Amino acid sequence: MLNRIWQLIIKEFIQLFRDRLMAPFVLLGPLTELLMIAWSTSQGIDHLPTAVLDLDQSNASRGLITAMVNSETFDPYFVASFDEITEEIDRGRALVAWTIPRGFQTQLLDLSGDAPAVQVIVDGADVVAAQTAAEVAQGVVASYGQQVAVQSSPAAAGLFPLDVSLRVWFNEEMKESNYMIPSELGFIAAAITAMVASMAIARERELGTLEQLMVTPLRSVELVIGKSVMAVALGYTEFLLMLGMVVWLFDVPMRGSYPLLMVLALLYMLVELGWGLMISAVARTQMQALLIAFAVIMVMIIFSGYAFPVETMPRFMQIIANFFPLKHWLVVFRSILLKGAGVSVFWRELLAIAGLGAAIYTGTVLLLRRRRLQ
Image: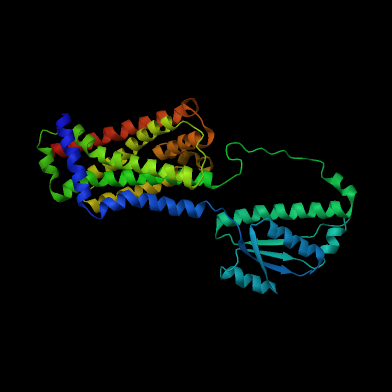
């Protein structure tokens, strides 16, 4: 049995490295993809092009613009009319627009009257940038208004009796990259493992050699194991290389146990491999296998909580999300990286991953046995 499996493993590696295009793509493609994605998402959202219509032209309005610049979220430039604001946003040259009304300074210094209204317009087509701009704009306006009120009348300090003490655990700087980059590593590793595995059996069927394998003493379980080793080895190697890139190049903290992460990552690779082998057992050609794998990966990303928090989905969708190993793995991965947590914290997620893996591999073996009997 071991000799049959070993011979099949050698065959898989020989076939991979004979393909001059596939081998470099599999080895270098995921690293390049993670580098580009992580680099583009680790910079944060700042210096948004911002059109400013200052109708007051006062010291107070200029002070507000200075506060806006100091936030580093906005990169202001001046326009002459509201029609120009409309044109700038329509053409995508500005993502944010501020309108400071006439009489802004007078109303701001008159504490007995109504507070002046500063209009902030954001381009909602880019939701992430729009949310950031809206939140920062509210903070800038509130902070500047309080500062001016206190300077003009010391008694106004009593209007703000509450002092909020905020502490952030596990991501003290609130860096979005500490959340995004580990997620990107997780689904890239899952994607490359599943896609390589999805072509394994489909390639044999397309070349007409699957029937030859089926009539050999090689059993279905042995065929699955032999086809799995190369994909797991490639996926695991890619995971280690990408992990080094994430920790040392992009400064994502690693607070947990490296040995624990290595063992659990291997378990996760094996489970994601099962998806690829199941697809390969169903697909007739390599192209079909790749298309099905791509569709599964896209759905997997949506239900993993990477694009949208699972907790905000409808209850039925939350139940469906539990059937995707990536959703559970991201919880485990972030817990080890950012929190330094142990198995006692995420043992439920590990059980879910193991259970899904058992179900996937059982289905794959049954499909191959059915093919053998046909």
